[in-house]
Length: 249
Image (cartoon, rainbow, N blue to C red; front, side, top):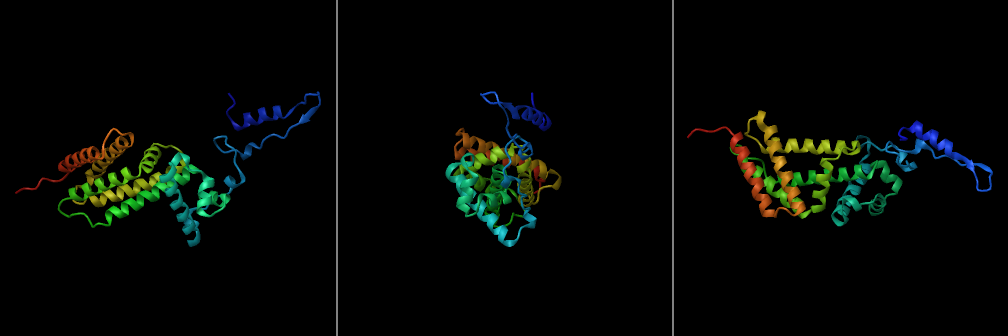
C-alpha cells in the first residue's frame, strides 16, 4: 500500500511521464504533494494561511469571530452540523471564504468553537439565577441538571453535535473540548459547595455520565423528557446523599 508522502511522490512522478494515444511522450505536471494536508486532502491557498490565534486577535477581529460563531450556531439549529458548509458560513457572516479560514482552520474546528460558545452561554444563564446554598448543594445541582436537559431537548442538533464531539479524536477540536471540560469542572466545583473536595471529581463524573446518557436517550427517542429528568434526578440524589457528611440531630 502506498502510504507515505515519499512513496506517493515516487508513484506520481512515475505516472507523470506517459505516451499519448499517438505514441508521443508528454510530461504531465505532477500534483504538488506539499499542498496536501496530513490526511492527504488538497490544501488550498486559503487553508495554508496561518490561522490567527485568539490571543493575538484585535478587538475588531474578536468581534468578527463572535459574529461567525453566532451564525454557525444558527445554521446548526436550521440544518444540522453535518450540513453546515464553510462557504455558507462565510456568506452569512459577511466575510470572504479566505478570511473565514484565517479564524478557523477547518469545519471541525469551527463546529467545536460553536459548541464551546453555546455551552458557556448555557452555563452563564443557568448560574445567573443565584449562588449555591451553603447548607445543601442538592437544590442547585438539580436546578442545573433540569435546565440543561430542557435546553438540549429544545436543541437536538446541538445535542447531536455535543455527543459527536465528545468522542472525537481530531486534534483540531481538542482545545475546544478541553476548554469545555474546564468550564464543566468550574461549574460543578461551584454547585457542589459543601461537598468534601476529595469526592467532588467522582460526584461530577457520575452526574456528567447520567446527563450524557439521558441526552443520548432523548436524542434517540428512547427516553421522554420526563423520564430523562426523573432518571438524572435519582442519580443526583443518590450521589449527593452519599457524598455529603451526615449531620447529627
